[in-house]
Image 1 (cartoon, helix red, strand yellow):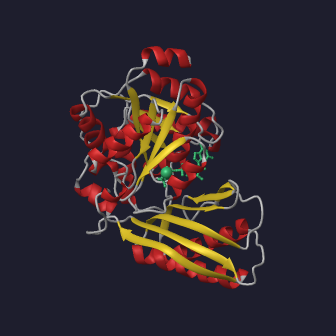
Image 2: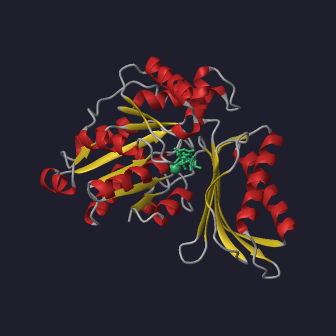
Length: 379
Ligand SMILES: Nc1nc2c(ncn2[C@@H]2O[C@H](COP(=O)(O)OP(=O)(O)OP(=O)(O)O)[C@@H](O)[C@H]2O)c(=O)[nH]1
Ligand SMILES: [Mg+2]
């Protein structure tokens, strides 16, 4: 299929929700999908969504990518239909023909709250692509009864995310061998025998074009599925998660240029140590820092037992830098905050830094009164 084909036959904007577990690779996958579409079909865009009010790593990271992007902060797109549609239309007016968005938090509920509502209320303005769940092989081990140091309650979310999807994409295939891939596929097919499954690596891009061709040639039936949204099991999982977003300015006291890749690496290790000592875990801890002229740092930790993944390193030293720290933790909000505070103090002492915090929010997923329904991010 070519760009011409799209121009001739595509009348509606195609829109897709990308779901999946914390750290499964939703943002990386959306970037890979968008680039594949930009290269082979037409203009794609990403709408990054998060529960926090601001200072979201994924929003800054996607904005840095060169792909057309915008964001909705403050709450899940499930609870702000009009705002979502406004944002989609804004992207269309900027040239987008295909739009991807993710859902934050527990990662379920968008089939009813986004797809079915959009189909019912928007008069067919958008063509809904297959509702796609991104799955990390590492997390699937939870459903193989292997111990991966996350609370058992979170298994419900992983399975419900797959149950809600029209398409399941086993991501990170670069991290497993052929036998591991077959084991994962066999499990997914046993649990969800009627759902198509595809494989790819959003990092190496293996399989991405094939998934994109599927997404561009199929649509979602947008029909309700019973997945236990709002059930006791859902609440039990949600209760265990907390969110932490902070923007901090790190300044070397003698104005000496530092390798902030090393500084932020130490910060990750300090948080890991603090959480381990407190018996908590963090399904996704991410940090982003912008340097000059497009230079940036981005890294992720998808659990205290794994190495830090440095997705992008700064190319030079700086005497000061502004860092965004986001954590989606399987720990109490206070425990998570204490781990970051402790790690920051250690890093300040180790590198001769002073830190100033310009933004901080920290809440349990079940905490009342934390959001404004996304109103502030409407335009
Ligand atoms: N090896 C490998 N790593 C990947 C792949 N896709 C994503 N990652 C890495 O996994 C980590 C998490 O990826 P994200 O795309 O941020 O995951 P996410 O699902 O958007 O995370 P949240 O939005 O926090 O839930 C990052 O370090 C990515 O670089 C992949 O295909 N292979
Ligand atoms: Mg993301």
